[in-house]
Length: 332
Image 1 (cartoon, one colour):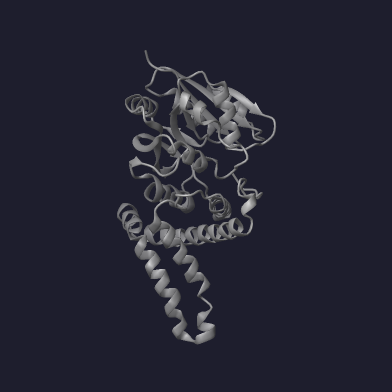
Image 2: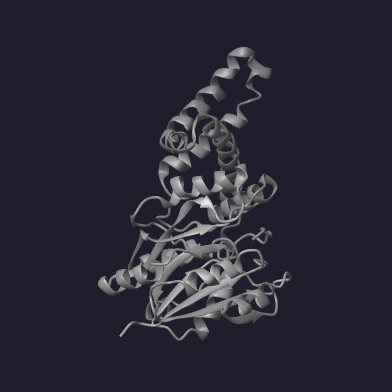
């Protein structure tokens, strides 16, 4: 008998995409699914749209964050397997079946995560296309063991969730890596392209960069022993080099034209470390788009490194407060 899968969808002001998300779950090949959308006090009619699309809708009376929303959905779920899915992701039809197969075949697997396709669901300007490609090539294209947890599309057995306990509702930006850290103390976490979806990405730097800054700051503030900020060490180093290049830009004013050597060298090293990403993007989309991609990516790296640097300083000077992330707002 096919196990019941509870697809839990936290939703905050996703009127534009939540129906597409729910409809994608309804098209899954796995026959036994319940769909639970947890509306996190949306103000745009998301709850009504989700209910009309065919989901069971639960509501939080105050905006409490994705961790709290996932916890409420899991509390009401009846399934043997929990599949967490973001409300701005359209899931490919075989994804739930693939998650069931992975979890059934590997008792030591605590969670199985999917990948996001290198396209944006509805938004298709430069920033949305950059973000889709960047997430795919930089984070999610690889299959196999994971250091963290990607909760945009992720499944685990319900008994594992009960064993580990709920997401920490006090963490607005780092609840997923914190939960991934807990899982990895007892189980494996893997990623597979058999679970896949298309995400609707941000369309402006004004929205994207504050998210990047605040999440990097919170991640650095909350880093746990053994974790590598930002994933691969080469990516962390590249972002750090971009920040160092920016900080050395005033050198020519102090020592003359020779001072340009330092920022240019740092920039060149950072670009070299990201060479694989740039080559793949240019191969897929052409040199012209690749150069535009690179310009946005450098801004992304600079913003991320600045946030991580500030979060690290805060962690050092306020060690007693490290159990909670800094009380700063972040767009969702």
